[in-house]
Length: 144
Image 1 (cartoon, rainbow, N blue to C red):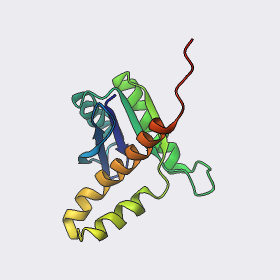
Image 2: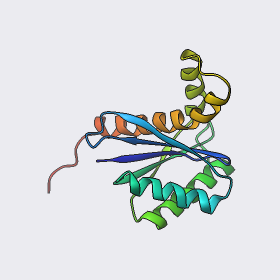
Image 3: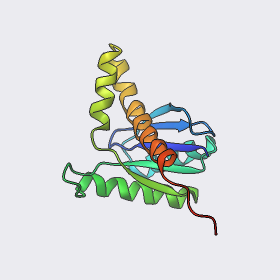
Image 4: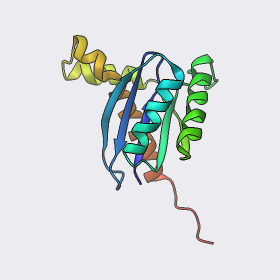
């Protein structure tokens, strides 16, 4: 199944997509857009263009598991994507993915403007990889 990962942000939104076999998640771009509705429309278009069958939106819960204002905004964004695409949209816990993305970029010595342009896509890849790992490791549903 082709999955489309989203790291939604107020200024930049990172995208990632996986192959049909769900083996590899790759960056699919970063959208710089502050308008919520426009960002949702362009993200929906990107997901449809990628032939996504499901969209995974990062859900930034607080460290204690509660939902703060940022998580609420991401939930609203996910709902808007669901309306625009008709696809299933999953909210996926993304705690610490941006921190991990920065660590990865430190390791590859990616700095300056280049770093700013890719960190959200790397975070989207991490969100998608986490969800793919969950799908791969969960037991299959019993046949009816």
